[in-house]
Image 1 (cartoon, rainbow, N blue to C red):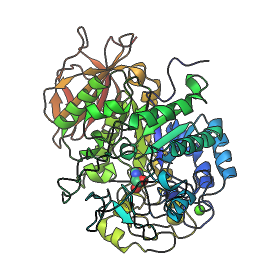
Image 2 (tube, protein in one colour):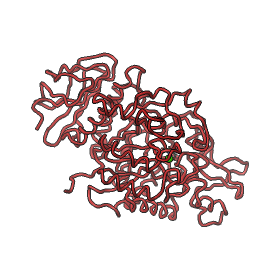
Image 3 (tube, rainbow, N blue to C red):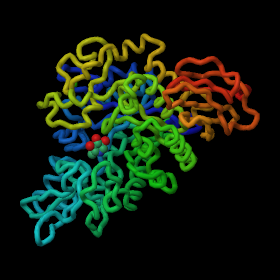
Image 4 (cartoon, rainbow, N blue to C red):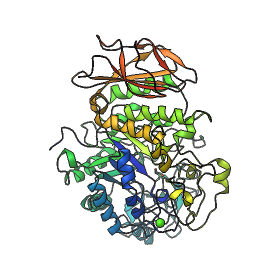
Length: 543
Ligand code: NOJ
Ligand code: CA
């Protein structure tokens, strides 16, 4: 049967930080066979697609985001045959795999960069971004890299400088060069041929730089700094992304098998986010909404506005919502107040998963994994499997599967310790408890997949008469309505829902609630607990 819409709309993509997901051979590092052995768990949760963080050969200056061979698997993660087996096993379970594609830069150990360094005359020299410094010395501009420090590194043999938006070990590719574009298109074909359903595109904002190389007027600004016009979201990006979409189209076979681009499309505003889809919708199908993921406060009015604005501006596109990933905080820790973290985690999950669009779930989010506390992160040992300390490791601890050795992650010593307090917070315990957070995620994902309003229904803006309550509706083409009410406050309240379609109510059935509530008799008086969630179907609207 052919679907009416591409599979990647209104779905759930689960992010696997591969190094930390499941180790299969006792070296303390998660790997592809380990992930394969956990596919049943993900299928049971309702996951439809998996984004796997980079597993290519890499010197690991930035754990795989410095790629030295785009068309192979690093030995620590397995082999190409393991990848092929993973694709087969995922397909058997109806799940698709997205490969993390690092576009902006390679490793400084990639043969392309070594060749580029070998001589200014080498044909690959211009695959990277080289500039002379000013006559009085120093780098060509005063730009800072995203990770701090200068964005230029001096190459002693030629005396020139190469540009890197990130680490010195991550030299930027020159996307003006047709050879780079052709080579990277072939990398995409390599993985598409081997069964990838698409890519998560790394750092798409940074592909081009201002050709006039202006100085940064404020190089000493402190993070988190806004994106800068001289090195991010340049107009030339659009051409590259359209070309990539065309490469994907070579492999498309109907909506059920359409290949997709999920973009790390960092933007500061929703207008810029809209541009990332392409004017004709022919660029990134799923640019992540970073505006949404950068506000780490329990702030119902902020999120109410952001959700309504996002849904209005992207009414003909698929919004992508998420909070957590491997680069910042876990939402359980970031939004938690130390007492109600699980209740708050239910609320943030309902907010990302029940909005119209596609939602990302970061591994462990479904059981309420938290960040590694600062002191434990500082004490975490360095060694061959963790060559350098990185503050982002706080959100990369091993997946907590069961009560066994190292939470079932590995029989060896994990590359990064588990939080000391992981206790009985693991998948096995939560699967056995129908009231657990894992079951809450499972129920939300099932509603998103199966409920006529919550699957593909349009966003219906609502207003709650309490400032702590965020409210929105979803309405299917046949008029079936669902209401989502989220109390971000620590006080219980009774809320009146305003802005309902004419003739709605006055009573409602409960589709899901945390904690459970009786079916409300009046939509102008819905009781919500502290951090309570209610997902309601108004009476008479169920087709
Ligand atoms: C974004 C990735 O998510 C991050 O982990 C990485 O360090 C940078 N891009 C550079 O590739
Ligand atoms: Ca391993």
